[in-house]
Image (tube, rainbow, N blue to C red):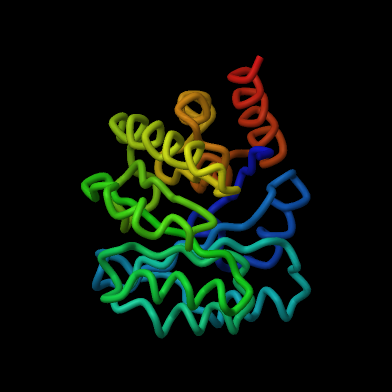
Amino acid sequence: MDPWITPSILAADFSRLGDEVRTVLAAGADAIHFDVMDNHYVPNLSVGPLVLASLRKAGITACVDVHLMVKPVDRLVEDFLNAGADYVSVHPETTEHLHRTLSMIRARGAKAGLVFNPGTPMEILEEVIDCVDLILIMSVNPGFGGQKFIESSLSKLARAREIIDHTGLPIRLQIDGGIKIDNIAAAASAGADTFVAGTAIFASDDYAKTISAMREKIKQTGD
């Protein structure tokens, strides 16, 4: 799959969010990543479905990838689907019936993602992989932006890549947490094809230059 860079709006300037999203898309982003936190499953509170709905109403048509860090999750899955999400990713710990939740996302015409925290074992993946369009490996503990990349996440990425390749299914493999120019190549080498970056992009002086530099690092891993 072609590599995607998906900036997380968690690091954007919320006083002018619409402009930030348009600017980062014009700078070369492939999709927009929503980090949704509930101050319950994770120790922070972020955006709800009304934010996505307002961006859609304002004419933002780009792919939106929603990462739900909320428990229980099913109600907000519905709300974000209604708001216009293209991908919705959930943690296995946040639903009593994971297969049903993933199937519900797909039944509504969106793509379903499954998220693994640094301490979450991957055994569950093979049980539901036929319901998954995206696997997200967290390279930080969820709940805050700007954290340091956890190196052991690379081995988890490599394991996920093996499982995906064995199935032959068109599943994206995403990495989220501490991704920046200096380490994106390591993530790509371990098998990631979709890269969430928040602070590294939105805190930079030039979004296009940062995204271009990330793409160059990814490209070098395939040379």
